[in-house]
Structures are given as structure tokens and as C-alpha cells.
Length: 409
Image (tube, rainbow, N blue to C red; front, side, top):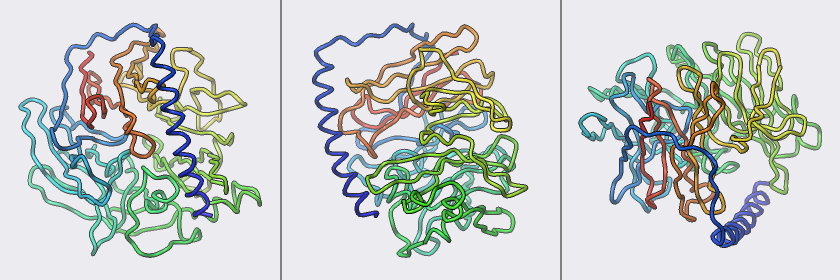
């Protein structure tokens, strides 16, 4: 099955690449339209290296420290693959001082090493790493004295109290969702009975398989679908809770994906489907119970505001946000930052939507060269500073991966 999926993916990617080039040529003959106002930018700042890529990772991780004076990111040689060691950099936004504070052998272009600041421990960061002796594991690093604490399995997301975290099989992701996984190094095959979502207690270091892929198949797939390959991705804790949500994906022999959004109750250990349309994509939390999510519900593909407790939802019907992106709210919940995937001209839009005025304003239009494609792509993945005044992105507008910051308030 995996061989068939892999072969189909190669063919699909080749055809997709040809199509992208044809669309680019066609779009080049027309003038691109932009009907939105521009957001006034107080200050724009780029972090760039002549020979190295500079990038952070995912949009739901914290690149800024508590007082927004420092950021962390990865640096890696331009002609690198995932077997190349990435450097972890601490950057002072006031002085411009750049300090190498660590290395990681567990990273990908989409989500980096899951690098992020601790929310409860000042000057501490988390990231995944790999060594021959420990395998894939989580590192807690103090950025001042560089002391490290290692935890036995890699993490996907941390709970609010930072005393437990969720994990999944990143090597399975490497096979079934390239761009989100880590290289196959463990030299062992984990069957679906023993694979799924794990919980690690950070005090006792106890590891527990919460729910297996086999159980997820039996709960949520019909008999025919249970023959498909499957995996979990995009795990995220419900705010101020140990409950969590995740996307469960199955892939048939033709390489066609079907996605379901699942809720896991940490007290009852029960799982239930929130969205079962086959299409679920990016989301962020509007509050403790409501998601702002791009999905298909009742044949409508749109952003929705979806309450995970009541199951009530309503589509976001403003035409200014017609396509998928990587959204997140600022601290006031008035503004939402979002991005777009490259259009036919390879332009990506970064914008802010004001829920009070119901207006969208573009911050930047950035070009992504054709070579940044598929698992090698560079999504903007916008992230707010803690004070809600600055937005930070990854981008390839200068034909190399750079960090760009925009102070807009």
C-alpha cells in the first residue's frame, strides 16, 4: 500500500509541477488585481544570512519570548536535507546580537523542530532532537545557562501547565505526510496497534498510549476504509484543559486523503468526531471552546466558527477571506492575521482582518520561487508577538528562507 501511495505521489507531484508552470505562464500575461487596502507598517525588519536558511516553523508556536525582546529560530545551510543538523539561534531584537544556543537533528521545513518558548518558565525553550542513544526526544533548554533536560519521546504540543505533552510517530508522518515528519532512523516498524497518540508525564516520565490507530480506524472508518493507511496530525490542547483535538487522516490506494476532526476527552478517555466531511484544514482558537477553522461542512468549503462543546457552527461569510491559510487571533481577539498559499504568479499575501470594522488590510505581498514546492514549500506561518503589535513570518521572497517582522501597531 505504501509503495503504491509513494508512486502515485511522485506522479502527482510531477504533474502538479507541470501545471504550476503552465499556470504561471498564463498568469504572467495578465495584471494581478488587488482590491484591498494596505496596512500601515510602523517598522519592517528582516533576519537574513548569506549562506544559510533562517526559518522558525509552525504558526501556532511561540517565536517571541515573554517580553518580546528575543526570538528563536533555526539556521541551516542552503543545500541541506533533513539529515543535516540545524542550528538553534537566540536573537536579541534590541541589539541584533545573535547567539548559537543549540543543535537539532529532528526538524522539517513545515514545523521545524517544534521549537517554542516555554509559557511558564522564563528563558526556557522546547524543541525536538535525535541522538543514537536517546532516539527522538524532547529537550527543555535554558537559554541563559544552556542547561538541558531531556524527555523520553518527542513532543507535538504541550499542555497549559507544562507538566505533560502529546506525541505522535514522526517517522510515520515522514512516510505518509512528507514535510511534517522526521527521517526514518529507529530501524523498527510500529504497527497500528502500538501506534497513535502518546502522553508523556513530565514529572514521572511515564509514557502512555492514549489511543491507537487501530482503535481510531474501528471507531471512525467503515470496513472498506479500514484497509487504508492512516495517521494523526495537528494535535492541539483545548485552552486551559487537558482535553485535545486532532486531525485523523486516511489515505486510499490512489493517494486520496480523507480527514476528520476528532475531540479527545481526557477524563472519560472517549473520542468523538467534530467534523466528518473528509476535509479539515488549519484552525486556531477564538476562545476556550470556539475554533476558527477552514473545513467543509454541509458541502460548503469555508472558514467556520465552530464550538467544540455544543457542536454549533456558523460560516465566516466575508468574501475577503475566501481561501485556506494559517490564522491566529491577537490578544484582543479583534484582529486575525492570516496568509495565503502562492497564487499562479507565486505571490503569497499576508493580511490582517479586523472583526470590528469587518475589513481586510494587506501587510505584504511576497513571492515564493517555483523551487519552494510541495514538502519543500515555505508557508508564511504568521505569528503574533505577545503584545499583539508585531507579526513574524517565514518567507522566501529573497530566494532564500528568511525571518521577516512587521510592527503594525
